Length: 205
Image (cartoon, rainbow, N blue to C red; front, top):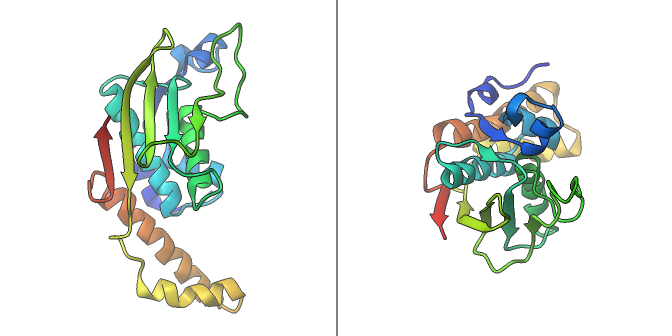
């Protein structure tokens, strides 16, 4: 399997999943999720998938600080409808990382570990809100995440090549260059601007 080298340089998200621990999936329920993992789940790497990863990483870091985030104990709310813009794509990535789902997730075991009703859309939040759910099901700390990659402009050559690629009239060399330039923008977002608050911002609620 071949993929851009920078995928491996993106910081991983560390998690603890109590359900995984209970069922013997991972020792102590501990595991990591990489950018490559979410790319496999999404089927592609783009600024939207990168943004969902960035939001998840920084939200969980803010909510749990030096602890491992507890997968399945995080609620996520979106200001937009699931089918509005790129919200659905973002939600799928965040769901994969946090375990939160609207109605399609795991219903629970013995009244515990339910992943349903942990994700909601068209909520009264400014963008995307992550909330920590405590062990007693009480609501804990919340943070709002804002992602705007517009300052990382695509290479002009990318925009010139896109119509040719989409029409199927690009040469193999042009297709390869289009792909390279596409991932170069993603690399700039994830590697050069991973902590840039003009692109990814966290606000405690």
